[in-house]
Image 1: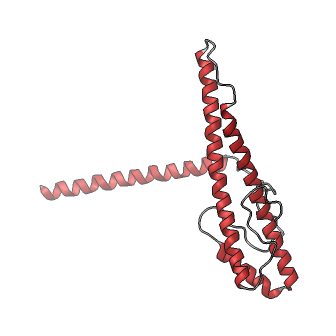
Image 2: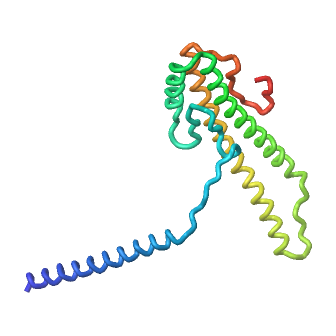
Amino acid sequence: MKRCFQLTAIAVIACTCALAQDSLGDAARQVRADKSAQPHAKIVVDDEVAPLKTRSPFPEISLKGLDNTGDICRSMEDFRKNHKKDEFENAVRDWYDDYDQMIKLYLKEQVLSQERRNDQYNRPQPVFSGDYKKYWEQVQTRQRADELDRRRMSTDQNTINRVQNGLGRVQTYLVVHGYNFQWYRIRHSANDDDL
């Protein structure tokens, strides 16, 4: 009797697994069919989105994830071996200038965001005029704008830090290898126009 119960239980489990696999397969086919029916998004990259123009023989500084300055330095070393000194300096200068301008733009945006935050007390406060719904929408709109500014400043600061750290590591590599370019300075203020 016990043996019969075990065989019945095994048979029920096997049937259940087979039915589950069929339904899982059907679900996977349905997902693939739905996915192929959806239009694919196009990614447009321009100079405002991509920090580096295509002219640079060196990789971009990784703004997220692991630091890739080792790869950048290796590519500079390979380029240096196969090109003249002035060609190497011009290539590094072009690569550096793109990031210097990027930092400058982010720092200017941070200054503007800070000015907006400082001016928030001078902005007119939402006034309750009898329509509670309209008043609450004005309050929420103002809160969302302030929160977006805070998040943007935080994200921008992370990007600035990543680029400054990457530029610093590359600068150390260049100095160690005898390339102490006077123009290679890391920007810390949007007003550093003497760089």
